[in-house]
Image (cartoon, rainbow, N blue to C red; front, side, top):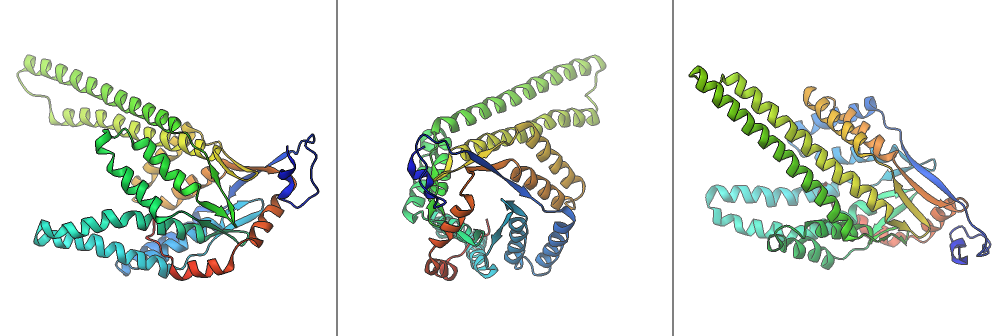
Length: 369
């Protein structure tokens, strides 16, 4: 290791022939289903009573709870946003979406201005939301910051999106990679910028495998459908009657279930594969990230969460959210030289601009994503 690696903790220079051991700093999550249920049910009731206008306050309460229960090296994260900033973002969305549907009731032509506002204002909204989320997330009183530009947001979220139909969708994996790159490469922690070096090939491999799985699922379902149709036609010809409606419904359900199970698996496969890959390519000077999410386990958690939420009419949604968050958090860890992580955080806080924080509090907003 070269001498520059010792600059984090302010220690004496380490000779290049002396190896500096890295220590692992795993994340942990201490949230409890019962605690979050009380927050969730109050949020739901107040949102209903206020016809949705309490949503920004509900979202801030939820994020603060999850941040406060996410720990790294014995310290919790903080969410510092003010609900009023999210409220202004909600009003903008309400104006655009509400205006679009209201205009459509009179004449479809009237919806064009709202559609254009949505298309050409979308990248700006994404840019503002990323700045807002980064600025209002902190660790040990040190805020994150986002340094991306509006111009880059338009190139990625509008320019590349326009190319999707002209490329037959083949640009989508690259487009998604550029979105991740736009966020991570412009993120910093107390002035220490993140480095993110993805390869488009890894994204294409993930999506090609997903496409093959989807094709296989639909292929097997179609074979099952045709086999059922042939058997049904044969039995109907022998008996001189059609198949009972109950039997038909049962067969269709049996064919539909594999599609749903398969599509959930495909989503989990892409998410876990790229999540692990992205963190492996992420670096903050000497601090490296590692994720050990397992596709099978995450699929089981996600699938049982969906079933529990549906069959409990939504009452187990808080339990599902806590369960999923705990698994994801506890699957991620940082790797940093064992002497210097605390100093790294302290020095990052010393380099952070208090003036910049105040300006962001005044002018930033979010749309509640």
